Length: 172
Image 1 (spheres, one colour):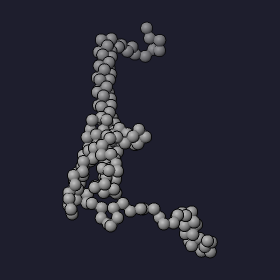
Image 2: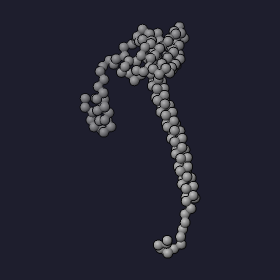
Image 3: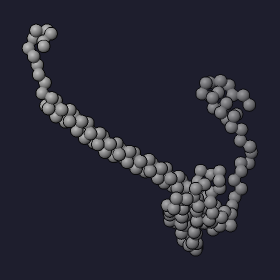
Image 4: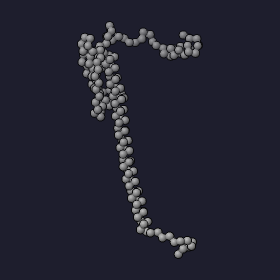
């Protein structure tokens, strides 16, 4: 019976069930596609994290090799092995604690630079190696004393510079 007096609307129950089935199928397909997308995003994020970590290790390795080569250059290839170890680690408090190093120096002779090879190995197994030529240290004294003849008063120098800038008289 009609309560409002309008036309009777009949809903075909079979048609309504078919529509509900399609909506459920759409939801399942959307869920599967969403899951595939999330797996892809998480995979890319994981790879990005690994590459960032590897890049950080590469940068620290380059800095460690640069530090070792600078030490060879400063001390000279002839005296370096007498002053510093040519293999070992950097110590537990060093930023390079997860690396071990080996320095190989082949003397070149009179007027010929020494061939220096620094090999660095990370705890993860990755190895870095650099070869270069380093000339002997020149000069008359092999290891000159490099301390200033008089103490340096940095605070007084800064005060003097500021006084000049501001036009104040310089006090001694």
